[in-house]
Length: 170
Image (cartoon, rainbow, N blue to C red; front, side, top):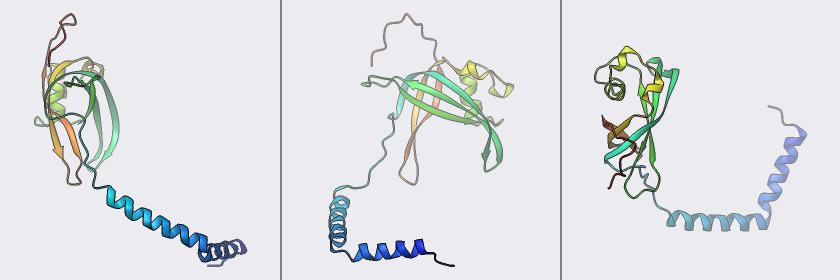
């Protein structure tokens, strides 16, 4: 590998800077500050958006994503947004669930989407029919090995609430 004049000049500048007393003072100060900061901040724990339990929710969005690469090849998925009423929260909390297309009767795709649709999801459906569904969702936390915690819809029951009902008391 050949070194050109610009690279030689850059190396000389680096050598001049690293020999400079002010530069060495800045590096010493940075090292002292680095030790202070690392001593003050411990490991941060991820806190999920919603605690475990049952909540009233409305499906406010649904999107079809097609031909996504997976370890098994290409597949489609549907992402459904559940806007959840959480006690003591001013605004609803959104949880987005991803449902990978499959014919397995034990899959969340079949179990949960069939509840929302009122029909077997394997028979096909319009994605827009998933939006605006009132339901009672059971939130469960999934703990990952790296410390992350995900709040997921574990079970759901379709509700038929009227718009003119008085607010739900928590």
